[in-house]
Image (tube, rainbow over all chains, first blue to last red):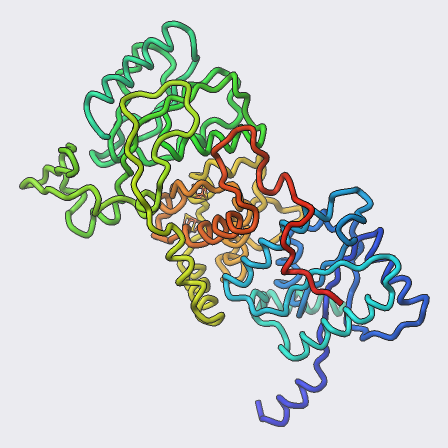
Length: 162
Length: 319
Ligand code: SF4
Ligand code: SF4
C-alpha cells in the first residue's frame, strides 16, 4: 500500500465505539445530552443495559473481537445505583478486569469505564469527546480483533450484502 | 512429610470413618497407571481403604470432586485441596455438615516435567522418599533433592497445612518462608506492553484448547462452561489466536479472587503452558486492592461477593 493511500485511509477512518450504558443513569444522561442538543462525535453505538452490574466482561471482549475500536461502560455514580449496590459490585469487577487487560498487553485506551448520572448530559458529551479523541490517537484496533479470511468471509460478506 | 506411616494412618482413619458411618465416601489418592502417577480414589467401603496412598505425586486437587455430591464426604486434603473446599463453602456450593476435611501434612508435590530433565521417567520402576530426597529406581538408583523438583506452585506456597480441618493426620508440616510469591508477576509487569502481548500471543498459539486446565480446576464448576455455550457463542471454538486468548483471559478472570494457586491447571496442561502467571497476577491485585486471600475462612465473603464504599476506582474515567 502506498504511503498516500495509507494516509488517506487513516484520515477517512472513524472509530467505532460500543457504549454500554445503564438504563437509569448513563442512558438517561445520554438522552439528556440529546434533548439539550449537546454536540458530541457520532462514533458511539449505544447498548442499553439494566445496570452496570449487568456487564459481563465477556461482553467487552466480544465487542473488541468483533472489531470495535473501543468499548465504554458507564453506570450510575457510586451511591446512586437504582438497585442500590449493583455498581459497587461492578466496580470491583471493572478494576480487576482493567488491570488484567493491561497485563496481557492490550494497549490502554481501548476500554473505558465511567460514571454518568441522568443529570449529567453535558458530562456525557465531554466523555464521548474524550473517548473518541483518545481512540483516534491510537488508530484502529488490531489486538483481539478476529478477522476471517478466505471462503468463509466471502460467504459472510455475500450474506450481509444480500 | 511423606512417609509410609502417614499412608498407614490414612488407611486406618478411612476405615474407621467408613465403619462408624461418619462418612459415606472418602476421596483420596490411589496408585496410578505408572509408578510416578496417582489417581483420584473414591473409597466407599472399609475394605477399599487399603487402596489409599500418600506420596509426592498426589498432585490432583481433589476438591474438584466435591461438586454435586449428595453423600457425606471425607476429603483427603493438602493445604490447597482444603482451601479449594473452603472456597466452595464460601460460595455455598457445598454444605459444611456434609464435608469432613481430613488434613494431611504436605511437603509439596513433584513436577514431573522437572523430573524429566534429569531422569528418563519411563524407565522408573519404583520410587521412595528418604527424608528430603526422592529416590528413583531405574537401571541404577537416582537420588534427587525433593526441593529441586517441586512444582512451582509449591515453591511459593506458605499454606501447606489445611487452614480448616476436622481431623489432621500426622504432624503439621513446617511452613516455608517464602520471600515474595509475586516476584515473577512483578518482573513481568515491568516488561513493555508489546512484550507482554507477544508473550500471551505465543501462549495462545501453543494452546490446543483441550480444556484440561479447566477440568482440573476445583473452581470451574459451571454446569455449562462459557466455552461450550453455543447460544450465544461468546467466542469461537477455533484454535485462532484471538479465540484462544479470550479463553485464557476469561478462564483466569473467572477464578479471580477465588484461585488458591494449587497449580492443578498447569500440571494438567499437556502443552506445558504456565497458567500460573495470569492466576498469580489476579491474586496479587485482589490482595493489594481488597486485602483478600481466598480459601482461608468459610465465613468470609468472597472478594467479588462483597464491596466497600471506598473501593479503589482507578479504572474510572472522570469527565
Ligand atoms: S486456577 Fe489453577 S491454580 Fe487456581 S484453583 Fe484452579 S487449578 Fe488451582
Ligand atoms: S490444558 Fe493447556 S492446552 Fe489445554 S486448554 Fe488449558 S492451556 Fe490450553
